[in-house]
Image (tube, rainbow, N blue to C red; front, top):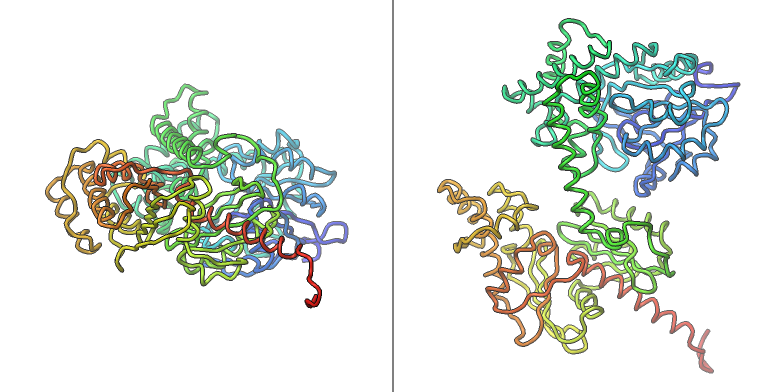
Length: 610
């Protein structure tokens, strides 16, 4: 171990940039092999968890590791002075990080592209020099179970490793020895064999990653259906023809071996599919996109690869446009964050389905807005979110509200969501009003007086009928995607609603509509009508404006229009409807902080204890 893990008598300093599944698996094993390992990622929540709890691997590989050197940026990593930097970033992040990586490019330091796809190593080589760059073809994978926990789904040894121009063979041999020592069998090859192996892996990934993402299929599901198997085989055939034109040759039965290999794959989603399903950018340009690019170079038609590439690009573009519309100042300014007016204040709305977070500065400007799924196992994660925010913003005071406020101990004060909603609306819309808040588990009708204070409020009965969870479950049973639901309903003249407000019976009624052939747009309209009629039965104060907030209105913009027709009144919507309660909590945090500050400034009267 001493020879293979030391350089010039010292433990080799190895840095892992990018703490996705690949990065965490490599970091854990190189630590096990005796390297001095530093890990780096710009996700503050993940980095905080790794600092406190380390990294845990589960599944095919079981391993726990803790790390002394944990960094939140590549700039901070420079102080570590690594001898070897393993780049485990997504390819679309690599180009943006090359300039920072170049600050680590001192004498004797080498870089390894531990990434999937074709030509990923040249992103680094073009900026850092070919003699400084190696490429590893990874033959293991995993999925994140938590920010610092990886479920390793498979390892099909060996991995392959090579210097891009064969000048750093000694570095490749050292790293391969460490990998083998730690139990990750890795074979050193030359640069020409590296090209063939990287194409081989990319062809396997390209064969079904996009298909699984678009079709929401696991690899096992895709390989069990003759229709999809035929598509997969044709995608591989196109890629093999393009590779041949590039003088990259495979054995005669290569396609047959690929199909046999894929049939043995587990019931999990490939990495690109996970990104697509979760509305994240993908590496399609270095998978199917590269096959298309090289096909054009040789005038070879790659119709299926082109189709998958363009479909994934279109879906990603739609997702990015949606994010721009939903974001706050980031969408409007399309640039850097405005200057902060310290101190800042944090509002946390722990809802039954989602936790909403708002940070405002001392001028009450929103400087951060985010949404996180609420699960019991995520309570710790939310505390890490708040810790990360406190590192990024000078937060002086915080307020928790919502369904889970009493279980959250990380806030300075706790207030009801009714009080917070009234506070948020009073700031922008003073005067008497009724606030309709449709959340995940209940519907609230909040009446505010001329001063904006809560005068009275009403809740629906102890049933989730008409709430966000009801809507989501019924839409899912009907086969309607939530993002498309409002648009579908707006095209319908349907006038029938669901008779039952019970989720169980409503699902049965929806199935009856499906069997009767009711079109999707009519089904969507009928679901909305049932909710509108449910809300209309709640008490509304006459003669005052009605404002609608909550996650339902944020994702179902057609619903307020139906409510206007049903109530015969204008329904006003607001900016950030899903985050209004969190905004109110942040405003209350500011108010209580200033009140305490003023109290502390008051002179002590004679005779009072100090």
